[in-house]
Image (tube, rainbow, N blue to C red):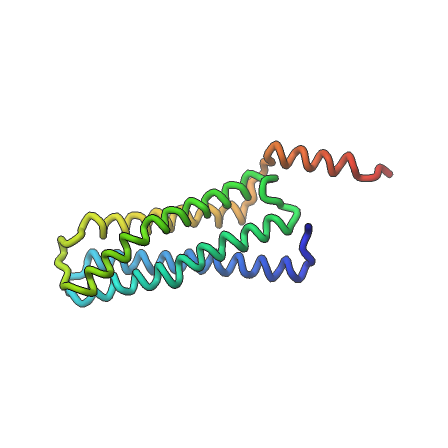
Length: 176
């Protein structure tokens, strides 16, 4: 079912807003992760990790889920379709990947924040986990830039399903 133009624009606005918001939130999260690793002041370290937990749970996770849902609505409600073009399918798979990795990282983020809230962290406490969080944030930011490029360039290439649907539509159309 194809959405009406007003509904399509509303859905597109919600999708772009949640996707761009995710990029910004992950960039802010990355800045906090770097500050948490580099800061010498224990209060700064504590504040960074507490802010990271809040940002992850209440900003990044809802935005990633909103981006996934609004992307599905966009693809299913427009002629682009979900399985017709490789670039749409790639965006879906990247969004699902980001969501899964984020969910897997949430326990570690919450654990570090919990330790930071309860104790004074030294520069070596939980260093491996803190580096992992930073690395995943940086990687996530890079991965999130790929769907932006795919959305802007919309590289050609239809899936077999897309070719079949296009052929069915063209053969079903009345010939003048």
